[in-house]
Image (cartoon, rainbow, N blue to C red; front, side, top):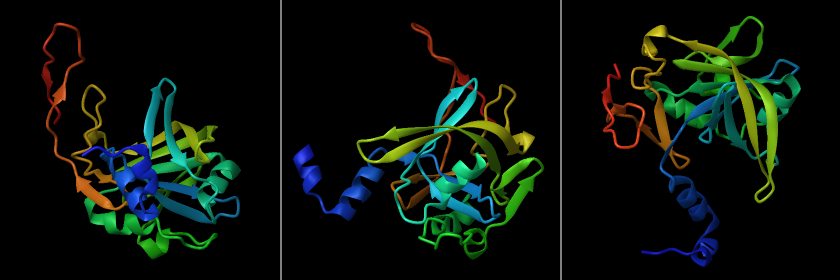
Length: 212
């Protein structure tokens, strides 16, 4: 089966959205936490988080700020800080509910069954139920004109994690953390480890590394 651009363009809008979103496969899944200058908190589910660099430690995500009641974007611009929080199996249904269109100014924490967690010197809330919590400082917004989205880039400035989830060489064990993933907008999966391999070099067979 070959599907060309004209066929994609002719697809029903909702069908096309589901199809294209699920086409790349499994993606990172995070609840993004923010707070306004008035103290109103917000969390939303994002499947577009990606690594940009380790020095400085940067993460990016894709945002469509032209949608109604987009408190996430406004709060990031106001405070300059936000959080990423992983999703674990026990809370995937509640995490999914954070993507509902709550009215602007209404915090998703209580109606979606999550607890706020704060640390001194950092404004936005973390999600207490998450096993990996990342605090970021807003650094740059890149306009993607082709579809009116933005790539938001932040520097990691706080990490809350059980030290038992970090292997001796710095590898973060997401199996132990129970981090789940997503395909498309609404299909959630637990991960199973196939293996971890040593740094690839030409002409050398990579070694299998111990994960746990």
